[in-house]
Image 1 (cartoon, rainbow, N blue to C red):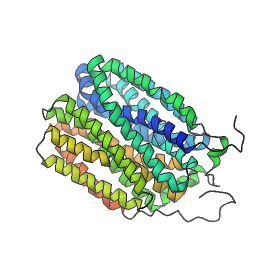
Image 2: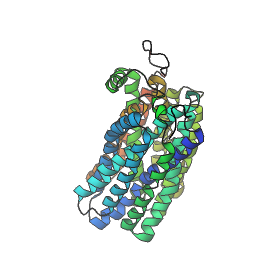
Image 3: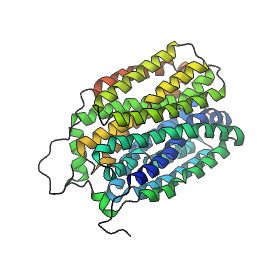
Image 4: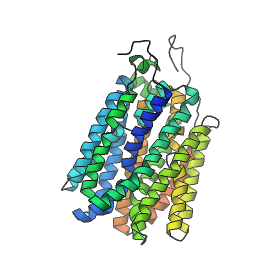
Amino acid sequence: MQSPAAPALSVKQVLFCGAMIVTLSMGIRHGFGLWLQPITQAQDWTRQTFSFALAVQNLSWGIFGVFAGMLADRFGAFRVLIGGSLLYALGLFGMAHSPTPLLFTLSAGILIGAAQAGSTYAVIYGVIGRQIPAERRSWAMGVAAAAGSFGQFLMAPIEGRLIGSLGWQTALAVVAVLALVIVPLAFGLREPKTAALAGHREQSVMQAVGEAFRYPSFGLLMAGYFVCGFQLAFIGIHMPTYLRDRSLPAEVAGYALALIGLFNVFGTYTVGLLGQKLAKRKILAAIYFARAVSIALFLMAPISPMSVYLFSAAMGFLWLSTVPATNAIVAGIFGVAHLSMLSGFVFLSHQVGSFLGVWLGGYLYDTTGSYDIVWYIAIALGVFAAVVNLPVKESAIPRGPQPVGAAG
């Protein structure tokens, strides 16, 4: 057992274990679009049925993310990560053996959503905020976000090959076992008891929540993150089927998702570095506007494998680039004492957007026979998000005198 004077976890340990956990958790998630067609065909379900379950997953992730963040801030990330790993495996197994849309929604939607809440960014960023100095925080968050991108690059082709060689049910069972690898990695993020208090302030949970929601910049960040969720969830889940509808070979979708993951490694890391030097609100505005332009150009260009790969590379560079910048702003404004919880609230907005992006994609396709309307909505929302991020104030929120030794 470590003594109260024990040093904090090393930067390398935090980044390695945190990055590996995010690689697995986000990598598995980013491949779910590959299961849409085999599951709906095998079960004789509509695309809306599958889309609704994945939409519930995003909403569940957002709702449970707030409480997972509270628990991680209070008791440390270790216990939350263990629970997230176990729920992930259980949800994937249930997803493989759900005979009805209701059970499929409970497993693929609610259980896996709760699992992601306990095994992804909000929890990992809480550890980063407590263990890594503020001057390196944006960079470290960029590294963790890049790991999630690498997970997509790594896992999407693996999941595609598993489905093709083993069938969709057995492939889900294999992925469920992979989710359990998070358990041993979580031991590397078991913080000393004093570390959990490193960012402590004399402020209750309710006071922290009230302060955040009264601060206009927090609401603007949430609005931008809503758009981020809408765009990413729609593209990640529906683009593989959109490409098949356009008569492109099945492997193009797998390569497209892999390219998004590969280029996002560079995008998120680059944004993490730029966030040390440039105004993060301007970085976010540029990302959202560039997304809108990329989608518009993709729709205007003739569809081909090359146009898909170019679009995937461009979107990949922008994919999770919002994550380190947004969370670094939250930490800079409010401090790290309640960082996981406040990041959870911002992420809840992201997941409401994800719910609408996934569900609307399936609903509008089933009603109109096309994804065109949702693509246009994604473009308009990108411009909106660029505008609302510009007025965000990044400086620490003014507060009264704090107790000696408290961190802001």
